[in-house]
Length: 207
Image 1 (cartoon, rainbow, N blue to C red):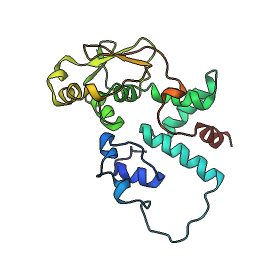
Image 2 (spheres, rainbow, N blue to C red; image 1 turned 90 degrees about the vertical axis):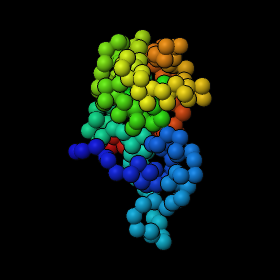
Image 3 (cartoon, rainbow, N blue to C red; image 1 turned 135 degrees about the vertical axis):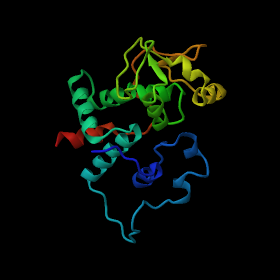
Image 4 (cartoon, rainbow, N blue to C red; image 1 turned 120 degrees about the vertical axis):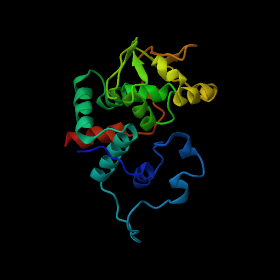
């Protein structure tokens, strides 16, 4: 199955809420949720009540689209979360948060996860001093994320430096004066500022 390449705003309209897929654009008047409130597709005058299964599916799709993960890969993350000790739902979000592309986004290197994934794919990011182009690789405590030396002269890095003062770094990450980030701990549920019902996802896969 190929990755979704259609309009990102269409996914937000389908879920009925902003998934912040385009970064700061989602906060402005150009956001499609502000201009087109109904979901995409044919407008139906009478809406049916969503079943419990439908609610669970919607939550799963919301998380999947937010992190840009395909179904097969998402199921692997869920299986990994089940194997880990602790609460499965929180483990799942913790696995997704420690993806390299998400960490690049959380550090403020990019305006959105899509843009962060592109930075990694194009070879602008280093992990522990080595260039990597795998957005899905999981980081560990103590890992260092930085920029390839040649990329510091390009536009993405200059834009990042220009806006660094108004960006907030999560407490489980640190950013030094050399614009290099480090994972100082694993994220807790309270560190994830997106509204997800992870219990519904666990129920979806438990049937």
